Image (cartoon, rainbow, N blue to C red; front, side):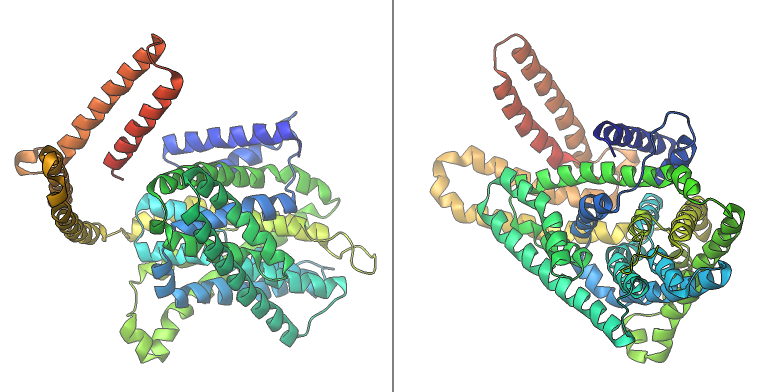
Length: 525
């Protein structure tokens, strides 16, 4: 892909994302639809997914950013359902889709059909989790969906390697296949933990900008080291991200602000890029199939149904059987509301990882013969990927609304924050009183600091209680509103001084950063 074409694609994808947010629709869904239409417009370049580009430059930062924003503690608490989906369901789907494709596509060998099953086995939960957050899904559902998306790529890509090796001429026995999977999982996790630990040490000794630069390198380093060691680079990235996200309070405040801003922007661009690329593949993939397009369309529709049903068939027993069979699990984790498995079973969108894996299928086997069924694998992967994105993307939001699932944890979160804020303010005031004896000449400063701590403590309780009598604005809300207006006035005055050559641009940037940091402290989600 040429540089100008790539930049044009990224700019267009970001623009479509902005339109989708303005219209209140799912950006991934609109990006895929626009890409599908644009692929047939004369003059639009033929954008092709390059597996190396996706696997090395796109997938690691997306996984790493998602892992950093995930909760290690919630991930650990939900390890059983995440494992059942990210490992058990992926392997189950590989076998089900493989045998279904073997029966549905005449002439497709079983080995190639299992390659297709491995390619289509891992769902891409980016779209599902973005929809869930926008509609206010409960935190546990989002944790399970997010955890599944972090780990399932590693399972699917390991199964993919085993299937490719079997077709290409280096077959594995079942025991060897299990060994490859365990090696990938354990080795990748250890590598990710080691790189995360080293990065954390580096963050302690580097200033904010260099620490942020180091953070940008972590996902690529973890992935490449993991792959070079013949383990799972994906799991290495995920473990490094979970570790560093859990340890992020140890870093400097300025570094955390920079990391959040950088990864937020990078996520937006990369997610927009990958979903736009999915839609733009249709023309090129259809052109690769010389004959039998109608037959493959019928097979693709059937495989899409098989893919959807396989997830439903797995999710319900996976939700209820462990609790039914093991009282200890049931006592520790009671049966969830019936709406939870409904949503989980309907969040099986496929994504760019499936397409990248399909494009990475070698053209020839080790003996030099053409890889059997490669064109069919490409076409069917594209069909099922787009089919599940459109099907689930259009039906999941109304399903969530119809089920009446909503996040009821807001009050509990506000209460917990208020208690923590109260305790933190008390600790801060205690520390201030310890130091006050040495600061006798700064009584005004001490009083200002006391008022600040009290205001932060009171603000949490005000947010918990909501607006005060008669719908009046709480003092903390009024403070933030008025202080932001004051900050805007200060900025305008500093800009006027710069324009009149009374201060230099370097001075302006310095004071703007201070004002921006203060405003960032005022922000509430």
